[in-house]
Length: 409
Image 1 (cartoon, rainbow, N blue to C red):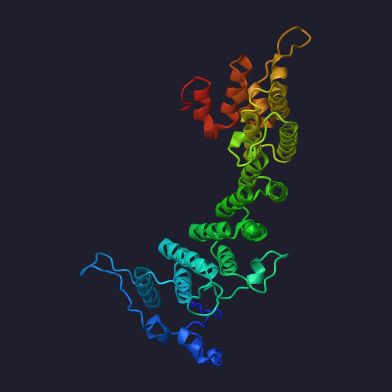
Image 2: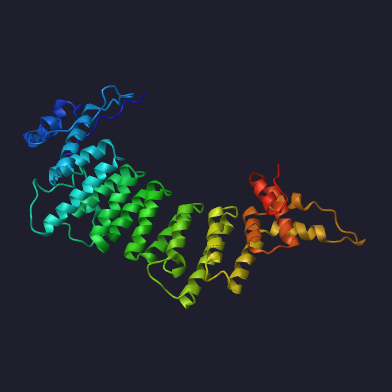
């Protein structure tokens, strides 16, 4: 098995060298830094705290072999958790605990309580113990997470905290707790954090374009700070990079229609307005163009389906005719086979053509599926369901059930 990398203890000046580092690499550190490289039980600044060990039964069924460093940190965390201490050293302690176990939601929750309390103390002109740190965050630059047009000469504790969280979002991008913490910090900072939030989520999505945590946080920022126009361009960019990126399509739908009362948007507008009609027209065209790039791409078809199902569009004959026309255009293989089967030769006899065999070679199953949803009961729909049963065997039982014929096998 792989040997885990040595734990790096964070300090208020940066990240201390791991204990396994050679002494010459740690030479030149002042006595305070040397002290911070030690276990908490040996640090002078923590002598006033009595650690609380994790309660264990006399004979546990399974004894977890925690690393000594982790036991040390958590023993002191329990102590300050019980005492309710609010100080910068507690922030440093929580940063160490998070570095060892980023999913510890109790530590994250306590960290936010401490940040909230310290922010309130700052507003009241009070001081907490210790000098300003990067939120206990280690190697990071607050400037990296600040808006370009903001003065970073005197960043607040919340600014430091955002920088700390932005770093962790890249280091541990699938961690729910870190994204939840970023939302709390962003809400406290308000609209002035919008640009840095978009930058942080963009960095995370550049690493993984389908990171649901990053998309969810970004979607919250768009709604909270009214960034609708900016986000529309971003989703187009992501869809151009990967037309099958369902997360980008979902975000685009929220952005394009989330301001309308159909989707419960925060900013209500009239559904029958010219603006709404233009957006619907533009987004239908956008979806059609991307469907042409990859006709079997379910994401684009789901986007078109979502537009057609909007309450303002559901009974609009022009819109329904438009989306049906798009679907029929991509179901041309089925239409060609159907026409060929129904045609007659020179002797007046119908051609004996296997519709299923011909359609399966040319037909877009997504287009047929879409048409089956919007068409009423008819012989044409039954023929489409029969074709889907042939060209989409994975969903064979579903198509057989839809056609009323029971299970396919």
